[in-house]
Amino acid sequence: MQIISSLSELRTWRQQCYKDGKTVAFVPTMGNLHEGHIELVQQAHKYADFVITSIFVNPMQFGENEDLDAYPRTFDADCKKLEAVNNHVVFYPTVADMYPNGLKAQTVVSVPNNELEHCAEATQRPGHFDGVATVVTKLFNMVQPDTALFGQKDYQQVRLIQTLVKDLNMPISIVPVPTVREVSGLAKSSRNGYLSDDQKATAAVIYQTLLAVQDALKSGARNINEMQTFALEMIELAGLKPDYIEIRDSSDFGKVTDSSLQAVILVAAFVGKARLIDNLTVELS
Image (cartoon, rainbow, N blue to C red):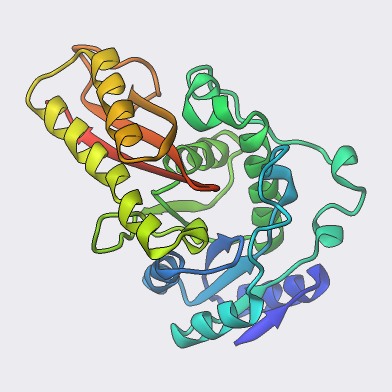
């Protein structure tokens, strides 16, 4: 497995792929890899001749009082996991490589969507999605993949990137990959590493809450405010601190109406200091 740190080396590698007629699938990560990331890499082999995974903890998508400094850096262990699933290249840039003029002087990519901008993660983490859109655009320009894979645990992020690629006419196929879960239903996440075994067991209530709301929607319930209140109470009773739970039309993140074909339930909650997110889509017709 090849480890590339510089943009010049990356471009040389990519140009050789072009010359050889080889396709490239890309898995962008912030490292501290878990089974969900590894599933993305394994799926990526289905779409291209070569798989490249980036490891970069992006400061632009962390807000004030978030865990940028505490975010685990486990590069050596990550490389061993990637090598075990035949990942071909690791792109490992520095902050200076990604933002040579500093964060304040960085051109920012913003994906406008009125409903998305006032929904769940976007509301609770102002500027977060601008940071995501900016770094993903930069990575796409650097790697120039044919395909890129993203986990559906970050549901809003996947939709944002799909819109970004479409709006900016990027010749990249975006492949969403279903969330990988613990036996308890807890979504695999790098932040699960902050949890004790007891906290992990308690955190399973997040997925149980999603299932309960899903059952209500499938049974015909449409009082969204009432269901959201019920879900918040369910999470609080388990000892977690809910950040939000929102039920939205999955097509545009607008309100669920009688004409909605599919809903998405979006949730974030604190388990100790760890902030966990999850989601579930529900067919309504």
